[in-house]
Amino acid sequence: MALLSNDEQRQVAEAVSRVELKTDAELVTVLAARSDDYAYVPLIWAGLVALLVPGLFSYVSGWLSANQLLLSQFATFIIAALVMRLPPITTQLIPESVRHWRASNLARRQFLEQNLHRTVGGTGVLIFVSEAERYVEILVDRGISSRLDDDVWKVLIDVFTQQVKDGETLKGFLGCIEACGELLATHVPVTQTRNELPNRLVVL
Image (tube, rainbow, N blue to C red; front, side):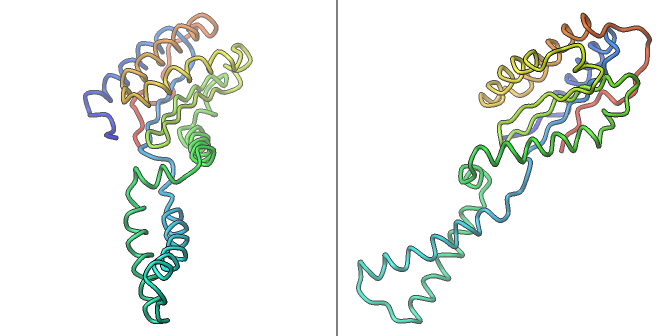
């Protein structure tokens, strides 16, 4: 999946700027191509295939010598590892729970790295997307969570996640930012003009 173009990133930044005119909340958007390189996954699967396939060859074609067995295992391992390193294949080999766990960890790291926990009044809001994992999360600081229930964000996350799956990441960002803005303008209305954090889309 392709990340957003410069023009699309500009649209996201402008949407954040418009929202922050109506609320004291500080929004940061983050888009990751993937949350982990999962380098170990192809090696594990290639090792399993290398153990099984030569045995099947031997069963079908008859007994393999020790040298033939080792050679076939080595060749199978190399070929399988190369094929399984292709990102679309690697992603499919990983359980969804593991993919989401890695994406969730990255989202929390980004919350800290983007200084969302340092805003005045604890009004940081992170909208995080990891495309390869098709994962969306909205994280809010204490000043927001004390005024809005977590279930409110779940509705927005579900809609955005489906849009990411459909290849409509830009549409998802713009819609989610606007929906967040409506909620935040009501529950965390603007009291003073300030911009503590950059409005640009952070692309990882």
